[in-house]
Structure formats: structure tokens, C-alpha cells
Length: 112
Image (tube, rainbow, N blue to C red):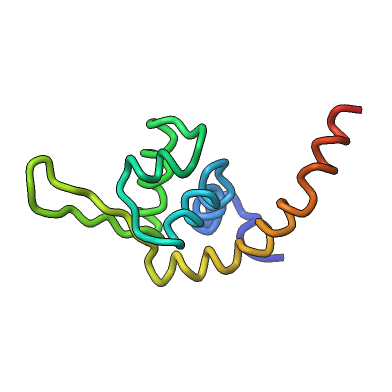
């Protein structure tokens, strides 16, 4: 077994971020193209400002997302996926494909 089973393993924090409700959706949206905050909020329907801000902050802290502040008033802020984030997105892609393929069946079981 890996160290991630130990309570003080740093990988557990990253795992928590990657397993977050909105993480895969935000990473996937950014993988398609760099986006500004309001564009992300529009693409990831249903996400609150608080959840989007927290998700972006966690992904930035983990080095998976880059935040670029441009010149201007107010300064435009653009988010993009880093090379490390591309690796995470690639690893999460099979999970996302499995979820898409099985979501109806899984939700049908919950209604029984």
C-alpha cells in the first residue's frame, strides 16, 4: 500500500483537491482553452462563486492551474492548465469517460 493511506501524507491533500466535486469539470473546461473567471462560471453550470474560487485556489496551490493577471482596470485574469495540470487531466479523463458512460445507470440505482 502507498503512503496515501497515512493521515499525514501530502498526497492526501492533493487527492482531496482532485476528488472535489468541481475539479474535473474546471480542469476539463480549462484544458479546452484558457478562460476568464466569468467564462468558467458560465461553462461549469451550477457552480457557485465560492466553489469556483475555492477550486481555482486549490488547483493553483497544487500547481495544476496558472492564474495570469493582465494590465488594465480592472485587470483581466485568465486561468489556464499547467503542464502538471495536463497530466492530472489526462489521468482523470478515463474516470470522466466512465462516469459519462454509466451516469444514467448509477442514478437509476439510487432511485430504487
